[in-house]
Image (cartoon, rainbow, N blue to C red; front, side, top):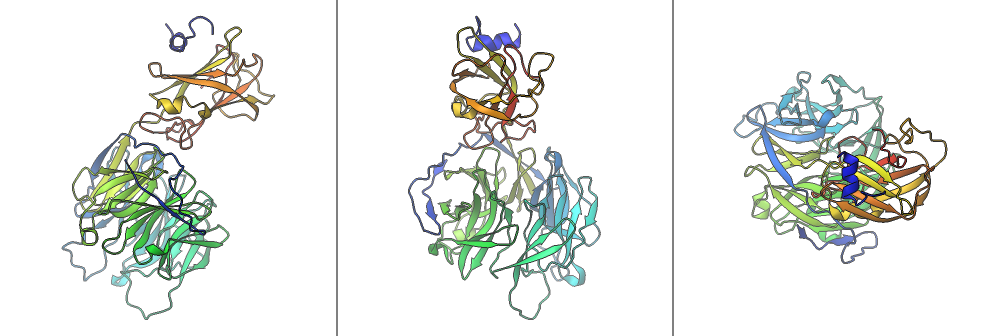
Length: 528
């Protein structure tokens, strides 16, 4: 019996045819509603492994995605027991393979990386420092090509005290500048001057002045702005700057003044920016913050014993963050990874080794999560089930009955997401599309085509044995017409597997994309 006979039989066509937290939300109007309406996903079933650095007495620091699922990694010597009277140690650069093997990336002598910014082409930008004269000195910005070749970005002017850096939506680098370096030589006191600097690919630097309390991190937001934290007159503030230089500030509630510090931030899968808040005095509960593009802020309390570090979007539609060890402030230790759904449900995951003290965390180009365990010199990897994909599509036109479209998937699906008719859109394709030799559209299974009116779908029935979804159309599709189907997997609530991992519809193997194709003629499958 061939596959399509199995699918028909499975679909009855043999004949014809964590922990929920209470959020606080504040904003320009200081609204404090009750339950957030967003619906979160449950935690994916993940296994956590760690891999030791090949160099002894080194600590992993920063992570950024590289090509083919690899990661860029910065390392620094563990200064415990070292003679610190000489030059401060420089960080080094390494590359982590998807298997966990770690190899050093050679850099020019006397050059060490700090802030990292990954490029879509697999290359890496980093702020370069030297230890000339016994003190750390910023050199500028270097670029590492995917093959490891290092080059210097020729800057039109020096950048003073660079800190956080990210690649903006405009293709330029954006940095926080003007921060004093603890390793810098003593200097006469001068008025604090902080800037957000834009650096074009050609090295042209443009400075945008900001308040003196900018604290270092910066991230590209889902609204096309660059977001960064401030301490403005003692009040923790989340701010954004447009690519043209307009700054807008959103202060946290007055109760946070003197109690928390915004540590790290990232763009979330829900169109908002998420950030970690560290407690700055004993007895204050750390929080995860969420800010909408309009500036409405919601805060979610976390475990009192946690000292929050980095935060990044995960492959399951949630945000992942690190809880570090800092017993002197909180009277305990955390040493965990954690996730928070867009609705605010927090789930905590212990790291494989005790007192690993996870710091940075980032997602690779293949969707795998990696984190740095500062205290034990290891890099951790979070492994989860692969995202589902659409493997086959079949159209059945029973006589005098509604048309049915059968989708076969590569793995098990969460029934609720698979049977939600809102996760499928069928539209009439506009004229002008040819047909292939099999009778199906010439472009089926390849690229989307412009569409016209949508077609109603009465039911979506999931069969867990055959891993198929049968869509029953409201009426019959025209046998001569062309139709496009979109299986939604790019947003929260889309088609996902039982671990909450969203559909990979674009062929990249990474979760979180729609599958789009033209529906084949009756009884035919699209070419892939």
